[in-house]
Amino acid sequence: MINNQPLKILLIGATGQVGFELCRTLAPLGQLISVARQGTKITLDLIDADNIKAVIKAVKPHLIVNAAAYTNVNQAETDQLIAQKINADAVGIIGECAKKINASVVHYSTDYVYAGDGHTAWQETDKTAPLNIYGKTKLDGEKYLLQSDADSLILRTSWVYGMRGNNFLLTMQRLLAEKDKISVVNDEIGAPTWSRMIAEATSAILAQKIKQQFKFEQDAGIYNFSAIGETSWYKFAVTIRDLSAISCDIEAIAAAAYPSAAARPKNSRLNHDKLARVFHIKFPHWHDSLICCVDE
Image (cartoon, rainbow, N blue to C red; front, side, top):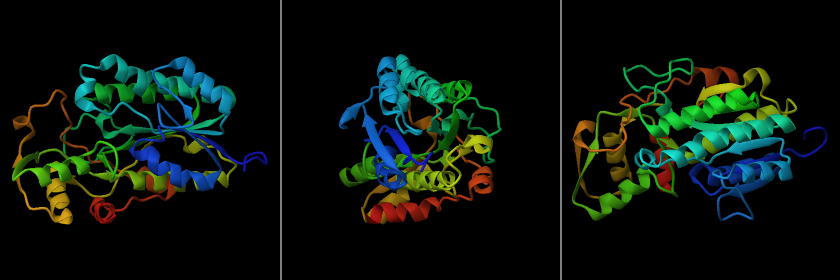
């Protein structure tokens, strides 16, 4: 309850990987209004600034959760204008609108804002230096939201997968079933993070804040927000194959041997100390989450 009213939550991107899971986990917390570019009763197009402002003005939420993004990393290299509008400009507009109505914002960002060199886990205070347009636009979105001075959390996650949408898990399951042998990059390291765990952890944080009349205040800011542990894309693929009981040879290759329009970080390890210290949240190990996901 906020001022004796149910918490009103506007979820943007409700039909995406994370948004779909958030529909379930956010619903018990208050009055949930779910929007997306299509497929929802109320539509919201992040390319249309006036549409964003009109929806937020009409709903008057206490909290805006933005789970929408332009996530095609390779296509963003040539589709820069659209990626910028969705990942950056729209986020700034959301922040400005939230500030005007005294609403809070949860926004998801990415490990791709970091340079991706070295071997140690990135902390939130480390220098950002994205290698591709996707990472640059996501970083701009963070900056614009912070500049709006809205009460906000920016949650940097990594290697998101689930049982819907376009992601590595579903792509691997399809390729492994179709082919006798595939090649997968083995020199990029990170933590695969199940979309359901992102939604569960987000709602756990919000449940804490509801008890405090719902404001992030001194806890606002940037948090690394991903699964525990680390692996390579190759080892991730091998684990998917084994858990899915599919017979297919997988060859480990260097990223340099796999042509890609967008450069990708070698090191996507994220340090989670801040998340644990402030919100007492700890994600499961990536392998444990993957088992649960595939079992479903």
